[in-house]
Amino acid sequence: MDKNRRVVLASRPEGAPSEDNFSIEELGVPEPARGEVLLRTVFLSLDPYMRGRMSDAKSYAEPVPLGGVMVGGTVSRVLVSHLDDFEEGDWVLGYCGWQDYAISDGEGLVNLGKNPSHPSYALGVLGMPGITAYYGLLEIGQPKAGDTLVVAAATGPVGSTVGQIGKIQGCRVVGIAGGAEKCRYAVEELGFDICLNHRAEEFPEQLEEACPDGVDVYFENVGGDVFDAVLPLLNDFARVPVCGLVAHYNATSLPEGPDRLSLLMREILTKRLKIQGFIIFDQYERFGDFIIGLSHWVGEGRIKYREDLVEGLEKAPRALMGLLQGENFGKVVVRLGTDD
Image 1 (cartoon, rainbow, N blue to C red):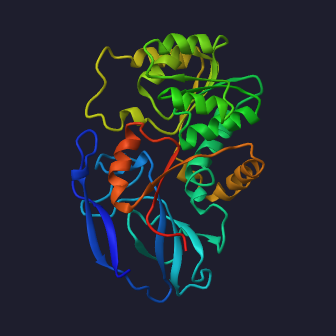
Image 2 (cartoon, one colour):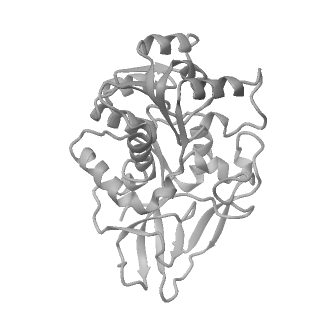
Image 3 (tube, rainbow, N blue to C red):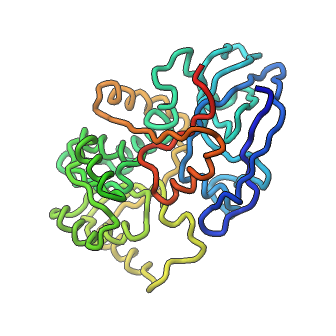
């Protein structure tokens, strides 16, 4: 191929993103200089955090500039290498964004070797989402055998891994997902004890019935009505790791209704709750240790994993829009080209 397609941010969304916020450019394939490698993207990860990067509001990371390539984790093949640690044909994990080709000086690249069995897993269960689940649950949630663990977005790449690790730790796991099919999958395939549809009219009552002994650990990545239903069920000294709030990412104003901040603060105080937000990239130097632990469980079949594969870079904008609306089933990965 002699063209490099790039999806760039054409405008900043107000509320939910639309396809008008993206633009596809075609440039020539770049050439690597000394000390660089040329990469061809095979798999691109789509994740909820990307909505935040489309905004110029102050956050933990810089926004994508207008006209800039959309950010994202990638698994690529090395086409040309002028670096000692990388050879032509190597698979690499990087952060090259929404484009067919990229130049790298090697910083941040992880060499996956010539023949990884599932290269795209480095974007999911053996990558950022899996590590988020592993660290957030074990180090912040600190589950103990017999605890009741509630997991939002239970069939997503983070939530599904959290729930399965919880079962390994001896917890009773209650999942929350959007729809009957996802709930069946959480119970029948992932081994959750129960899974509830948050779209059900009686969801708060169903959750209370499913947690007769209260909630010891709530893994939060949704917010909104789900958090409202969980909050009164939290036990004394409950732990709440917070890695995302996808229900609010498209919001343009504060939620309607009475101010509930005083209610939340009273619950935190009287129940001595531990609510801790975390950004997994703050733990980058520990990723290797986390992946070793996850790989062991995945290899044994104790953690199962599902991908939602999208074919073609041009479909990435629509796939991200659907992800933010909960339309995906599993980890969303875009395949840009062939695996060879």
